[in-house]
Image (cartoon, rainbow, N blue to C red; front, top):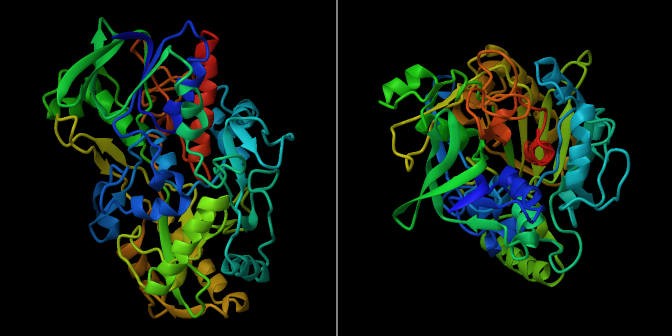
Length: 535
């Protein structure tokens, strides 16, 4: 088989690229995805993310683990990643956040010419189909459905009131002129038509609507790509395994890696592209030395405070709560609304830890459910939780190989809290969440706190080291920019290798201040435009 473009990874970036590049009927595109078709009930029903995110069992989830983290009591962190068409947008909380405008201006300052806020905003607008309609900062006609939550729980409004009582002002639009404040998330969820209330994954937005009408677009699922085929310094295709058999697919123009912050560097390394020391350690011939591959890993480390609830109007996994969820599922199937349409993380706040800062450095996620260890530790009690993460961590980690088998998980080492400033800021964030959770507005629900401690700084530090983990935003491992450690240039072309690009969250030179799904689709929109226009 041969195509003009071969895209590896059918996730948030891959689905965008497949749509935009195949829009020209003369251009042939092949999209390879390791997971399944991405259309099942557990993906379409927002509340069913609870069945996928834990990785128990592995439903549409790679369910990776990190290396032991020295600053987190040598625990192995859990790293869920989507494994289906739609990628992580098929298993996430559907939260539509772009990050702060200054984040992208800093990308430009780091050498990423053409990636400042004014450069990327048109591609956010192109992607977005917002329920509010179009304006200067929102797209109204894009394929990605973005809408308001249908029925956030009463306790979520209590959270907003609690934060406001601490002088955190309301914000109705975190993607507007001002990010700071407390409010409700908008979500990537269908808000009209037959799919109303369903998750709008990248596949649902970009791929499924065109898949059957474009004979020039071929989508292969349950295909594991083993490596990029290189000839005379050029990528000409990929080796992949499907159904236990080895195959090849050729690319006349380009191979595009969109396998994510873990998968894309792993594939480059398996193909002999990366740091010489890493390749030599695994006996891989060096096809092209590129020292930045797998370096610069950044992620949002998250800490959760949970309480049992005295009221039952939250989400619980006890018998009465399961009955309520069952009734909610039937309502959702009828009209797409209600508790089953919840993103779980219903409320948010973006906060500055110091008034002198030019933008928020802490993000909160509030939900009407007890979240413990990524829902891997189950509590039958009714309850609620508030997360806090450091938006721009200073700690940097790596992604490498465990061995030369493509079926092996990558070696993921975020090196959380390796910079002590991250711990100091996270502790500030937890102290703020504690104040919100003890505010009068939440008193009607407030029961016993889970994982309570003596209130001291030492006790809080111990709690963080014992329980903190990712909130699912790894980036940076094939960083864009200039200099020896840049993996791709500003067109996302792999430095020193012709016919090969990386287009996904791994190219972010620095982690943005917010959730990373919308920015990943923006990146793919922008690079697709470059490719179509011959850049």
